[in-house]
Amino acid sequence: MKKAAIFTFGCAVLLFGMPVTHAAVSIEDLIRDSGLAEGPVAMRDRPNWRGANKILIRPVAGEIESLRQAMPDIEFVVVRSTTEALGQVADVDAIVGFCSEELVAAVRDLVWVQIYWAGAERCLAVEAIANGSVILTNMQKISSPVIAEHAIAMMLSLTRQLPSFARRMDSGEWMDDATLVSSMMPVAGKTLLVVGLGGIGTAAAKRGAALGMRVVATRNSSREGPDFVDYVGLSSELLQLAGEADVIINALPLTAATRGLLDQEFFAATRKGAFFINVGRGATVDTAALTAALTSGHLGGAGLDVTEPEPLPAGHPLWQLENVIITPHVAGVGGERDRHFALAKENLRRYAAGERLLNVVSPERGY
View 1 (spheres, rainbow, N blue to C red):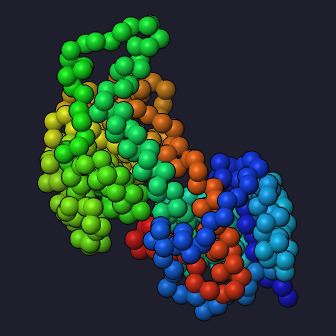
View 2: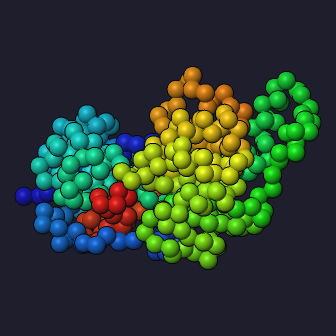
View 3: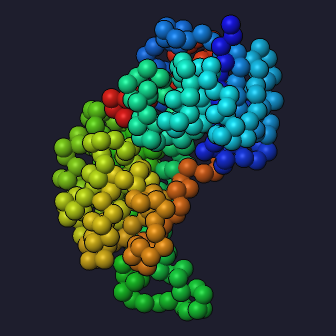
């Protein structure tokens, strides 16, 4: 009896929601340049793996034909919604694009879930994934370069006071306020703290160092880091390093240990006038504590691509602050489709061949 695999691309609209002509992305280069790691166990050694024969997939443009050409022995069944998928998942062995409890529960013998984003916290709330009986892979590190660019763009906008100048353009006001101009800060020679030296954090640190900044960082696992990071501290050193930084970039994943970690104590420990950038996860930050630090003038400004709650309510005071930039969780958008598709295609190939997958999420670590 043939086993089936289901692949539904739901939250990947920006990746697969429009016709795309894929550039040649070498998976070997992608693995090397992004530091992608293989999982510890080959799929053929999983007790319930029986290969992939039938794939249920949300409609995409050229990607469907590309996959069919690359894997002609697999039948691709195209569906348009999760509701439609629910009626066809009972005997499948893999899900790509969703990790809801409802969908996972509908499968009798699920082996693998692939998601098209990096944050794994929602998926790890599903019992079968949390206990390791279902393997989870994600897109960690794939969007790191463009997310790091977004963080640096926010940093430079804030340190050069661009939001304040931009807000006066509608009135045609030639803003030459001495107080505002005097608060413009060069970043060369200043200290950048990267909280969470993973894929995004490392990419941000590299760009900060290229701008002439002294870069320090924290990471949970070790003190190891690339040459462009001057010092890597453990998570226990967070408050000390926060007091040294002129700019702080939060790139933490959301886990039980990091939820609400950047709280009142953290912001009180920061240097007065420091700038705070969040391109990690919104729930790692105590929003009330961040708002208080900004409204009191302790923080010089903030750039937020993620918030808690998300979306941020229309009446929230953060919207009204002149020294705050808020973008709607779009840091990972732009120029990464080919990289995402290359990894997805490679994991599909590896899954069908019974090999070790890339970007396997550890339920114990939470990422």
